[in-house]
Length: 177
Ligand SMILES: Cc1cc2nc3c(=O)[nH]c(=O)nc-3n(C[C@H](O)[C@H](O)[C@H](O)COP(=O)(O)O)c2cc1C
Image 1: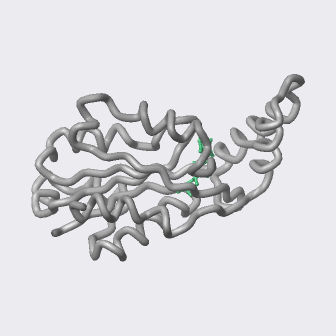
Image 2 (image 1 turned 45 degrees about the horizontal axis):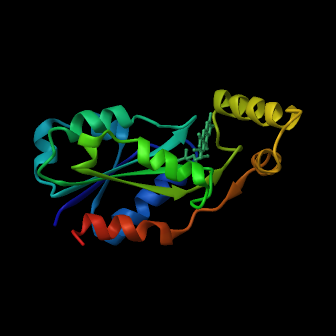
């Protein structure tokens, strides 16, 4: 079973998950920029392809690229993993997982979520600014719920809640379990 893991990552969490996945599956690892330069023939030799992107305002970064390619890869085992700052047990994660794929895409792509974290030191300036604004809006919201206040507090500084255990269901899917 030949496996390919493609990822895009700004601050390193998605990259780390992609590396863990490549290691566990014995697969090849490719940054999205490198993958975009490959011809269609390059992907023909792979039985399983997995795309990983981080979550930005509820969207998976560059998922559109993967979805377009995936429509030609329906004979392969396909997975997409998404990495965000929310913990796996956040109910918003379930809603997101249910809505990220169309009914048709669900028949050939399986989607997973892996909790990552925030790394303000590695974030590019526009991302850092967007997050600072989001956190300050949440902090100043008059009728903020307990949950929102907790979120704002947590997101105001860097944290790492990533864990290799979250790759297990993805590995099982890619291996055909
Ligand atoms: C502008 C911006 C928007 C974000 N939106 C979300 C979001 O909607 N949901 C979420 O769980 N995390 C969100 N995050 C957090 C990132 O997805 C998280 O930091 C992730 O671990 C980054 O992955 P990376 O290290 O591979 O770049 C956002 C981060 C930034 C900078």
